[in-house]
Image 1 (cartoon, helix red, strand yellow):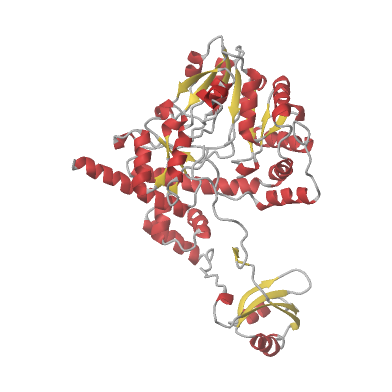
Image 2 (cartoon, each protein chain N blue to C red; image 1 turned 45 degrees about the vertical axis):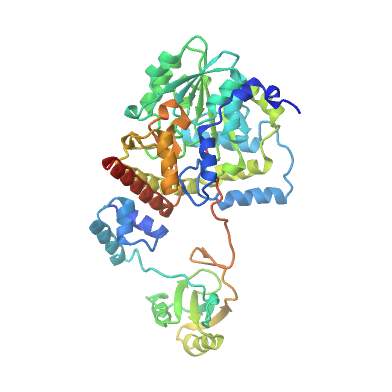
Length: 394
Length: 163
C-alpha cells in the first residue's frame, strides 16, 4: 500500500480546507435547509447569451481558440472596459481565462517568487491566500474594519509594504463584505504605490454590482495603469458562473508571462463560452441593469431587516452580500452559524471563513428571490429571539 | 414615497398584499396603499389577472385570434370601430396593429361554434369591417410571460454553499 501522506507535496498537504468547505459539508446533511450561502447569482444567464452559445455549437465552433482568447472577444472586452470604466487596453494586453479565479492564479504565479510578500486586505475571497502560499509567496493579511466600512486604507497599505512586497490584492466590490472603495480611497492608495515596484491585482469581478454609483477601477487613476492587473469576468455581471469565463488586462509583459503559464495548463478558455461572451458584452447592458435593480431591492430589504432585529449591519454598496455583526448574540461566528443551521435550518457563512478579522461577522448572500429572503429573515429573527430568551432565563 | 418602487415590485409580485409590499420596501402601509391606489386611478395599473390553463380543467374553452381589416372614419380614425368591437364581452384583448389587417383581437369562448357565430353574426357585419381572418389556438405555450406545458428553465440547482 502506498503511503499517500508521503506522496502528496508539502505545499498541497498544508493547504487548509476552507471554512466554506467545512460549512458545505454541514449543509449537505440538511437538504431541506434554506440557504443564504451561495456566491453566485440566482438569475439564469440571459437567453441571448445562451442562444449565441448554441449557435456557435450548431455551426461547429468546437476547436481551441488562440491561447489568449478569440480576437473578437478581446476586442469587445477592451471596448467594454473603455465604455464602462474609461480604461484603455489593447487586445494584446488582454487574456481570456477560465473564470476570474484562473486570472488571479496566473497573475500571482507570473509575479511571485519564493518569499515574496502579497498584501491581502481581509475579509476577502478565499482563493488569494492558498494560491499565494502554493506559489511560495508569503501572505501579509491586512485587517479591515466595520468602522471604516471594510475599506482598506492607504495608511494600512503603507505600513504593510516592505522591500519584499510584490503584489497588493484589491478585491472591491468586496466578497464577503459588500464594501466598495471610493475615489478618494483609490487616489490615496495610488499615492502610496507610485514610486514602488508593487503591482496591484485588482479583482473587479463584482464591478457591475455597485449600488452607490459607477464602479471606478484603480487602473484609471493616473500612474496606476502601468502597475495594475485588472481581473474581471462574466460570472457575476451576466450570471454566467458555470461558463467559467473571466479575463485579465494589464501591462503587456505581465500579460505575456501569464499567457505562457495559461498555454501550458489550460491552452485556451472554453470556446463555447467565449462565443457566448461576445454577445454578452455587445448586447446585454439591459440585462445587467435589470439584475442590478433586483439585487438592490433585496439588499435594502435584508439590510433593514437585519438592523431591525438587532444585528448591526453596515450598508454594503456592492456585490450581493451583507456582513452583519453577530457579536450581540454572545456567540462566535462558527457557533452562531452552526446554531442557526441546526435550529432554524438557515445556512449562512461564518465571517472568519474569509479571514481572521471576519470573526464576529457572518456572510449573508441575497442572491435569492424575495420570498426566500423573507422566510430566511423571519427564521433568523426567531433564532435571535430564542437565544435572547434562553439567556434571560438561564 | 416613490410610486415607481411599488410598480416595480407589483410587476414582479402581483399577488403581494399591501402589508407585504410595505414590509419589503420598508414603507408605511398607508403610504403604500395610497401609492397603489394612485397607480390604479391613473390607470397605470389597469388590472390584476389570473393566468389559467383551461386545458387542465374539464371546462370547455376555445381561444382564437382574429385579424380584422377595417376602414378608418373621417376625424376619428379607428377609435370608434375599436370601441364597438371592444364592447363585446367575448373580446379579451384588442390591438390596432401594423401589417396585413388593422385589428388583432383575442377572443375567449366555450366552443368553436360560439367563435364562428361571433364572427359571422356580430363582428363581420359591423360597419367598417371589410374582412376577418380567424386563427384558432391549438395549444398555449406562453401566456403573459408564463410558460405552459413546457419548461423553459430548470429550478435553482446551485450548490447550497459556495465561495
